[in-house]
Length: 252
Image (cartoon, rainbow, N blue to C red; front, side, top):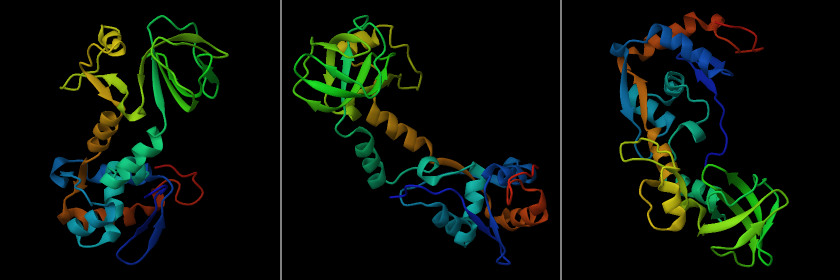
């Protein structure tokens, strides 16, 4: 699994190696010369594609992966490139495993809950991992004992009444959204019905949100293959103008 990767080096056809500290400086140079539709095309990233493999597929060499990064402003492929199926499920586990979401009844809480503090119903305890006031949602870890709906919970900062419990964090609502992608105001009855368990209309779970976000990264722009050498020549011509190659104090 990719954990961290900040670009990178550009290897030109003459084997000149250019270190990159500011991807957007390179992108500005490329976009200034190739910002018309005639030069680029859309591409949908497929399962198994990497910047290097895509560069090889399009341009015949993986050294042209810089063209993929620069045109799309990709700084870190772990965040800016869609995860593989295995990496996606590993991310879901890392982010949501062993996290329980407690939804409080609207207007039952007094103040904000604070990350890291302990909540209790008098017998069970848990540690606040996060507090989402908009959704009246406490994400809790390290639970001992049992929390149940209608329990009164307290912490050093606040108190409230549990309306609904979602045992798996990935299954809890992230926000409410129509099929066409319109984000809805949760207080127009959607959140109340969700907490009461009477209706989950338009509820987008954390898992669905992460999946949608991941898939949204599949649409990118790529330079048409016939212009890749011209783009390389533009970089060579402008190499002394590109920002932050060395000391980070040059601007385009």
